[in-house]
Length: 619
Image (cartoon, rainbow, N blue to C red; front, side):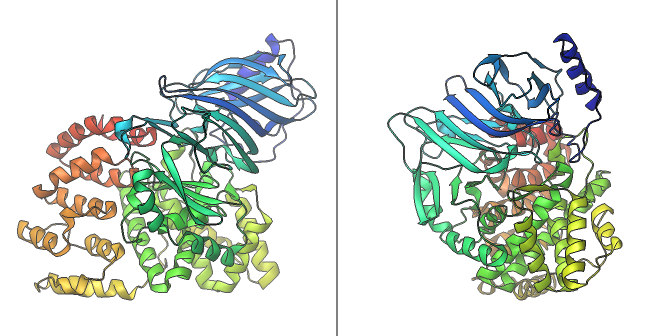
């Protein structure tokens, strides 16, 4: 990649009569293998974005005006694009310049090289997105809850921001931004910035993000949504029919923010709001600053799945505040966030509740390691990855999240929670609004523990977790009293005692999931019927339960769930739930045929993040 872009830039400079550089390149950060940008020479610092959203053409027409900083001898700035039609590029106050797009790379898109002059302050890029832009999900009215108006949302992580804004699309590069966005007058526009609470009469909305963010945190949502406050600094956006339900589900939002601040320092983003998106959203949540995007699948009706909101809130410190330098270091975002999320939930709901979450995380992690090993991808069980030449979404696995969590938990348990809390609070404060790579983290924590506590964290500890495949033998084993009670009931059933519904009347989603995950892999038709009657799983509207039970039903050919599974796959876009079901289906020829038939119906409802995964599996 680097030789191709370097040759391209040199050719552009020769054509323009600018010559080539002779001074050596200054290395200030690890080169991001997923960006063409060379920030040591010229980097962006602030975006002014003026855009018009067209649902008729499924395009955004916009001008991105980038304030830049460049070294005195820099004569080119390189940005990332994918599928954009670049119409015009100028410098400062509309001064003409030359630009060129490189050859297209299937994963990275096209580098955009713009010639700059000494003292250039602004690069203006007029462009239009493609109707197939990978970050943009255009939904028809029928795909929304209200059925009256269309909907648009973005998903920029990991490297999809370049498909709707020409940018230096690396998590190691930060910028502030302001925006003016025009949308149809019946709709409200929201961004990862300061946001309106109500629609206006013009359809034009203005936004400001004063804190520097990475490009993957750029976000836009446009739809017929309304707002309901939870506290003075937090509230919920959702389609009208879901607003009251969502506000009830997230009633503890302010308590979560306050609890997080007590643990690890002040919330630095002013407001924390959540928007509940239509079901095609491919993730559980996305931590866009000031406006978390959330899936409706967490509206369980019993507040049992709100740990996802705690997770996205925790990203306001781990990820948004201190950001992985490249996607090879993704575990630094997610491992810290799962640790922080678990501590928030413990603070609000008690140790046993948090241990239930940790136990489920461990089961998921062990399943992920087994799956990666079986697929001959054991190298991906390391925390520090090598994703060069690959889509960074390949690193979005339970390894980054849960192996990262258990690594940090191992340090806490070995040397004491008070020490780890002190470290984490200072880590976020002292590195705020900067990027961190794995080596930088190691240097920081080793020096911190040595200087403050006279504790030596040795290299074998880091190597065992970060650069070694699989899981250490001494990984923590979470212990939950409530899960032990579930285990006792399961043990009795395996010894042919009937399942007693009265013992499960107060179970939360977590106990039910633990029950399902620990059933024998093979069940007779009579056992499937008895288990279903015990938990009423086939009638559940809880997405976590539907997925776990659906996998068991597919494996054991429980035809009662066939219609439910098909409907769920068609109407749910969250990749976490789709993957187990499709992967279980393709294990047999009949299942693979069924999966392909369902996927053909479901694919139009999925975001690119999901189709990029399942096209490979099912086509």
